[in-house]
Each structure stands twice: as C-alpha cells, then as structure tokens.
Image (tube, rainbow, N blue to C red; front, side):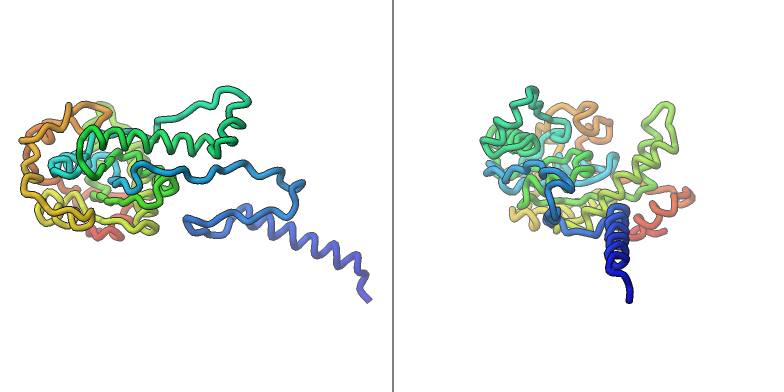
Length: 294
C-alpha cells in the first residue's frame, strides 16, 4: 500500500508546478476581471488598496486612438469645426500625475476612498470638464496618440467612454516618421510603429469602437465624418469640411501636427505606403488584419 506521506508530497509538487506555470503563462482575463483572492494572507501579504471609482463630471468622453503620423490632427480639426464638438490640441493626460509626497498621504487618501490612480483620474476628468465648459460645447474629444498606449487605463477611468480608432497603413507611418527626422534610426522607428500598432489591435479587439482609416478620411471626408457623427449621436455639419475657416489654436510641436499640410486649411490626399517597402512579418500581418493589401 502506498505511503500517504508520498501522496502528500506528490500533490505538493503538482501544486507548485501549477503555480509556476500560471506565473509564466497567466490565464486570459476579461477587461473587468478581478484577480482571484489568495488562499492565505501569509502567502502573498495584504492586497494593495484599490479605490472605488469616484463620480465623473464627464461620463462619456471620446478618445481618438491612433499611431503618431496617422492624421489625428486632421481628424481633430474636422471634429472641432462641429458646433457641438470640442476637440482641443493634444492634452497628454498620460503625463499628468499626482505625487503623494508624504508617508501618511496615501492613508489620508484612503480615508477619502481614493488612491493615487483614482486621484489622477479625478484630475483628468476635471481637466476635460473644464475645457468642455469653457468651449460651451457638448462633447469633448481627446486625440493624443499616446493615449493608445494606455487605452486600458482610459477604459478603467471612463467605462462609458467612446473610441474612434484611426488606422493608417504601417508602411506609410514608417515612411512619414522617417521623412521628418534628420537622422532617422530605422530600427527604432519600426519598433515605435509596432508598439502603437499592437496597442491599436488590442483596442480593436476589446473595445466597441468606431474604426476609420486615414486613407478613407482624406479620400471621402464627407462619408467618413458622417459616419463619425452617427456614432457620436450628432447631426453632420458641412462646416466640418471647411476647417480652415475656424480657429483651432496654434499648430505647434508636442500639441499635434504643425506641418504646412495641416496649416493649409484644406483636406489633402494621404500619402500611400510604398508598395515595394518591406515590412516586418508582424506589421505585415497587422496591415492585412486592418484591410490593407499585403
């Protein structure tokens, strides 16, 4: 008869094997999944405090998710030309932080049912509300490309947010970045485009978003902007296509595109990707998934 102590040892080895396997390849979870509670506090220590979501002043902001050099500034000024939509320059919420500078500050926030992330969320929400109130409009759109890299946090901050996914052929994005840099590092540029592209694909697969392409936006601006207006629940306005007649603030670096193309006030055709350019296998795969020819 098998010694029960051997059975116990075997079960312990199997259990440790499962824990190691899960640490290396954690199971997939949905966006709203909550981590499973540990069996004992001694095994992992106390769980960090996670604050509940505070009320929002802007419940359903709109975010444009895109790579850099994908026409997001053009989309911004078209939307900002609508009488009911405020689309300011890039707001860079991702770089707006709070600093809980003393040891007791986190405890003070916890007593208010807040943590560092939620304090930042409240601040971001206040910034959107302030800009929207100043504009006198009804909807606010933030088109900062790096928002794409933190789309999961935006979803956590604003569960009712809406998203416009603006795609451009990765080869054209690489060409545009290369042409704008005096001493381009081709490997770094391709890595940057891949990073954005992976996050765009994640968002496309996980969010209920409205998907458009830069190529379609410049070729059929009325049709594409009509689709966006339908998605946002506002009537389409012809003035959207005449963005040059409106004041959109200063076009300058770090706040969006500042090229002569956007300053012209006219919608101009998108530069196409070089059909002879070679993409990495993953970028080629993503381009095909987005409907671009291989």
